Amino acid sequence: MPNNEASEEAKWYVVHTYSGYENKVKANLEKIVENRNLQDYILDIVVPMEEQIEIKDGKKKASLKKVFPGYVLVKMIMNDESWYVVRNTRGVTGFVGPGSKAVPLTDEEIRAMGVEEFAPVLDYEVGDNVRVVSGPLENFIGIVEEINLEKKKVRVSVSMFGRETPVELELHQIQKI
Picture 1: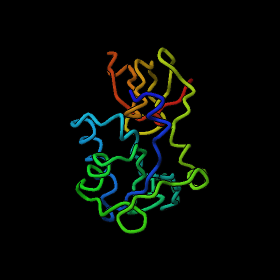
Picture 2: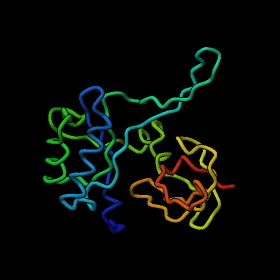
Picture 3: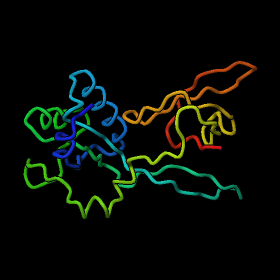
């Protein structure tokens, strides 16, 4: 867990990726951070998504679309090692900024992009009864067993075929009953 001093120094940077590689870059970077134990320097990696409703054949269909295709947001403390790791992650073409200099987003830009919305606000806690609101287990009822904010995952025990089964879901996939 990063100490408070470190997280105050951390800033959001925009990383340019090959188009369509945003999620792959995020996954690769998360794996590198874990393998090299860089959690104190690279704190968060986000591919901004928004839900869009499409109407096809008279049916509403919700889908997630990338807000900034070809870009990934990284909250990090900039030093030689963190710069090198991000810059040399497969699929990354570079940081956004003049030359090879990475320029952090200003507070105004972060607010305008709604980046602070990515920090989840949860209306449930461990032990609460919840309903799965999306995904293959939609409408299943369960009990929150564990919340992992770093991975943005929650473990819920749902009753499946008469047995309590732990399942891992995204934070936004459940709702308190």
